[in-house]
Length: 159
Ligand SMILES: [Zn+2]
Ligand SMILES: [Zn+2]
Image (cartoon, rainbow, N blue to C red):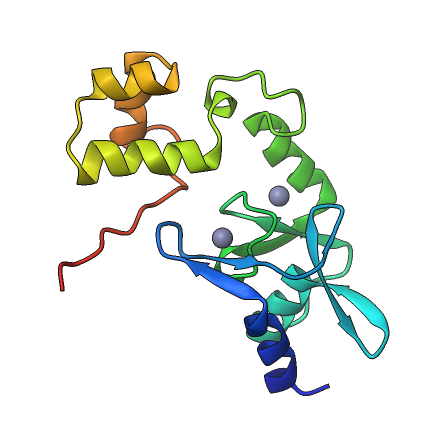
């Protein structure tokens, strides 16, 4: 199957998220991951997206979403790595082990919202902390880029 056809199949069902630059898959999901059906066979959307843009995934590797959005199919946010390394990243971040560290208390969407409010709208960190039920130092470290630094907001230029 030609690259352009696969690319088109992916693009038809993705929505670009300006804030995170993620390309969110809005088609069929299988266990939380986008699934594309080609000639009766199912493929992971993220794997396909990576392969058509960057080349083959090394054997034994899984695709990690550096943006931590498993529905994202932006090849720039996808990184193949061995399963053991992948487990380690997620365990450290608390996503797969009960969300018990301080970073995991917030969801990605909330972090984007905090960054927007603090950086773009210039709201006081104290007010943001109260709204999201986190400590003031949490908000400071998010705004200073010390935690959740992998999540970037794109500041839209005025037209
Ligand atoms: Zn992404
Ligand atoms: Zn991952």
